[in-house]
Structure formats: C-alpha cells, structure tokens
Amino acid sequence: MSWQRQQADAQKALQQANLDEGRRAQEDLLKAREQLTQAQTEAKEAASKLLTLKSAVKEDERGLVITVSGNVLFAPGKSTLLPASQAQLDEIARALVGTKTQRIVIEGFTDATGSRETNKRLSHNRAQAVVDYLASKGVPSDRMEAVGRGPERPIASNRTVEGRASNRRVEIVVQCEAAARR
Image 1 (cartoon, rainbow, N blue to C red):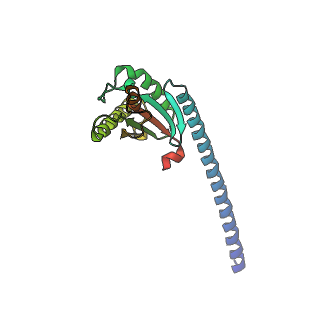
Image 2: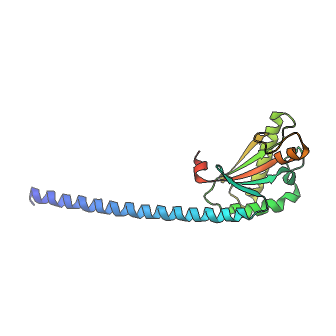
Image 3: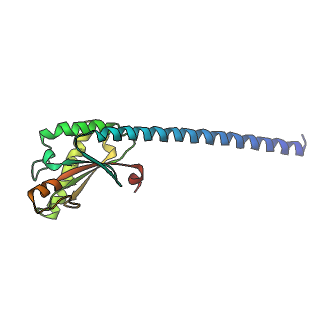
C-alpha cells in the first residue's frame, strides 16, 4: 500500500471518528435537555402542590418559601413539635417528596426576647426538629439543612405580643437552582 493511500485512509478514518464523536455529543446534549425538561416539570408540579398548602407560601430570591407559625409548631421556649403541628407538616412533607431536584433549607426564627445565644440555639433546634419530622415522612434528609437564624429578619415588631408571635416561625425554603448554587 502506498504512502498516499495510507494517508487517505487515515484521513477518512479521522473524518469518520469526528462524525461519530459529533453524533455522540448531539445525543448527549439531547439527553441532557430531556433531563432538564423533566426536572423543570417536576419542580413546577412540586411548586404547584406547595402553593395549595394552607401555610403562607411566597416566592423570593431564595426560592419558594413556606412560612409556618412557631406557635403552631412549638410551645414557647421549646423545640419539641406540638402534636397539633403534625397535620400541617404532613401536608408539607407530601408536597416536598415530589421535589426531587431541589435543596430544602429549614430556617428557624425566634423573637428578640432572651439572649442572642439562647435564641440562636433554640431556633436551630426548632429547625432541626422540622427536618427530622419531614425526613420521617419521606423527604430525603440529604436534601435538607437546618439553619437557626435566632431573632434575625423579624417580620413584625418585637414590642407587641402579636409581633413577637409572628417572629417565632419556621421558614421552609425550597431553593431554586440559582439559589442552590450560591
């Protein structure tokens, strides 16, 4: 076989390899697009379920935020879930089980009474109690994180009984993809 023939065969083989690699890359891209579309559909369905909850639900830069009053979940100064809170958390858990691709941050808050250190610890313990309960209902614990915020970010004045009650809350943040990457 001549040198020119070998060079032509090698060039044809290289062209075929490039074509094959291009086809594989296109197939991989199509699969990735299908997976992204499926993940977006699942996220929309889960968000739709979450919006039907009786809890306060809003969307902000962090993602979908479900606010549950601390008075519904805990006795004052305690981090043990009240039995009456189970129905509401069960409903939230059923919706969250469908959020396969989301990260969930459970944020606990307190009012401004008591020491900052005590409030930080109490708020974290409350958030962890909610994480543990949701995990017991099938929400994957590896997607959840408990964060104690203490008296940070009050939503009402701490000068009134009603305001302090509003500030004692748990926020369940179902993060959007952009927020989860931060």
